[in-house]
Length: 470
View (cartoon, one colour):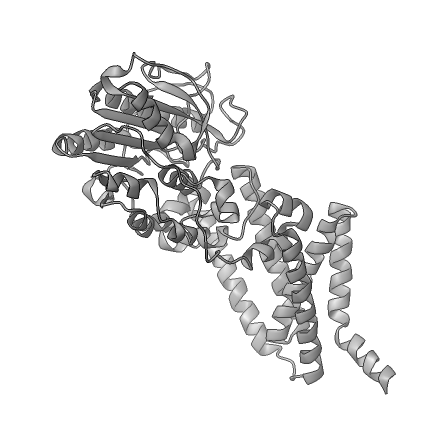
């Protein structure tokens, strides 16, 4: 009797045994004899038992797993190629913005390719659902129970792994756990109930006007493609937590003083949950000092969840794309510059902190721009030439603001991340360094220095330098 039960147990779960062995062999051939091979196999088996427990069809469960793995691996390869990092669980929520803001994302893959991918995924999903109905097996109580037991055992194993690796960084976990197990690992992570990061106090003497410009994909390029930048400001390299995208990471650190290390895995998208735990941001400190705090960004307020995040951080006003005339893919830096000058004049009699987020320098750089080129780089690459023209126009905006600033103005200018340009890094080998400039109006020539700093320290550093001049 016992032998018969054991035989039935093995027979009913022969599929998962075969799948598990095949997956382990594939992982071993790719990753060698390592924990990553075992953990990846374990994660895929967990997904398989979960799906099979729901649809009760071994073959379709296997098809769904293959489809999901193909999508995840394709995304991971593409992301590593373009953005120099692995696919992360938080990306699932960021990529969902494709459906909310399709006009922003479609140009990155091309209209035809985007709709082909969308149609393929839709049709495949419909076929799978139909086959689930068509090939529905009679309910087998024994198979269901054994699948459920296997699922619970595998869940217990993943829980143990989560406990063992909870203090590791994302890079360490990708290396040790593998891609699939890492996705499950971070999917199960919860936002801490108590998160009270250490935030520095902005207790330095402050000017009447603080103007901070976050310039899209701004860097000072190399000798070959270079053009005059300002020599009347403190400048240096800025350490940022992203490359080619994910502006909100640099943005969040600049506005709160919270480092990516403090955020841990929440640093991948601080605008989803963790921002709610920030109670003493730099913005709230400035408001307590009597500053009117405003964001100027010529794009949609809801993008990156910015409307909710900025409201929580303490901004008084958010000026978005509705006040700008859109004559190109994005609002040009010259139009934005004109608006900023007018806004500063209107608010010259109040204590003001203005945070300006540019967007003209955003990729893709393969798309034609309506704004005539001002800088002819002639690099031999159209993508690079387009970027350098946009970067030159950003530099013109910087020089215009430097020229018009007075002794009561602190100007902070920095790049959020480097541009992602295939086969080019503009001769800058460090992917996670951009450039910053700090100007004190009439005191521009009084003090100069070059110092590499982290983006979360830039605002405090700028105010401390301002105090040295007073």
